[in-house]
Length: 431
Image (cartoon, rainbow, N blue to C red; front, side):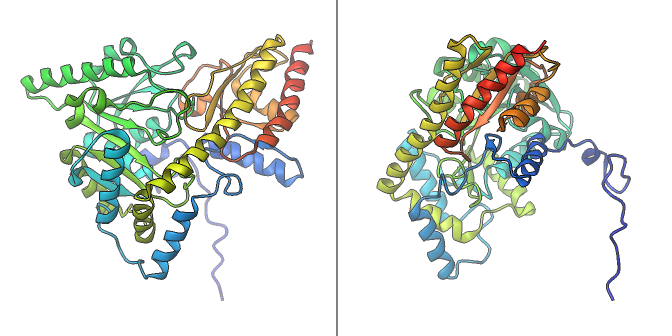
């Protein structure tokens, strides 16, 4: 007879069975919104879902070559533990990929493979930070606040604005760099779909080098830059640049976060990598070796073989960029038409990644006092689902939202835009 345990206590913020850190850890706002969408869909509503930073495999399948190589590796029995820093074939393939595409040739000891990009971010935080150390990051940005909380670090949040595409400037970062141990930057940026200007990035990098020279003379730990460019191959009309290419002296203090999740629509395949100075990467390897956060061996071998097929990867990426861009452009042009018609909406022209930044400037109208209220209204009335910038650390209710196009079609977008316009007009007409 089974023991009935269904009456066990439900989770609570005051649960004494867990530690203080996890009691204070905030759950994902995006997952909460996703639950609302599932409920609407379950009731028979068709929703244009622009919330998830993921891909619908029907719209964006992984490359045929990658899929076939995974199957072949599994059939070949590649199902045992991989090395803790990744299989040699993949580390070498990443080394060639970075030299070929970014002009950066790193030693193999500077390349670490993991189960997606998230373990690389965690390992960077864990390897660099001691409790109480300062982490500087701009907002909106993805999850830096949660990683800092888990590590007991002190967050210094730099709020950005739409005038610079929500990208930080040296002037904004400068007051905090002298006390920082880790600076987190991302370009193309999740959630905004914007990119750092090369000269703005160069200025930031040169300042880090200057700071570290001064610290070396004082015997202090250096400032490390974590540069998340997981979306770098999805750039539209704007050049992607790297800190190390701009300022080579920064190489000893830089960790790149990267992988196949976004470039090849392979979020569920779970292959990511960190690239940087061996002094940093070796310690990150040790951290992940204890966590067991490696990518499956078959997927690693398949990714290695696929990355080296340059004709196939370049062909796939060309099509991938076109298909992402056509969705972003459909949204952007739709909002531009609304703006030209006098409606209080604005969007930032897409530059990279799978995201569009859109503002509905209706806070204070028809009882809508917060971004979340606007989100709920558009979900309810227009069946249009998006994520407010509060989910990415920007506190102010200014009407800015992230729209993600990986799980939808151009047709769905074009069908939804008239519903959005009608809802905005309804808000404006309300007394």
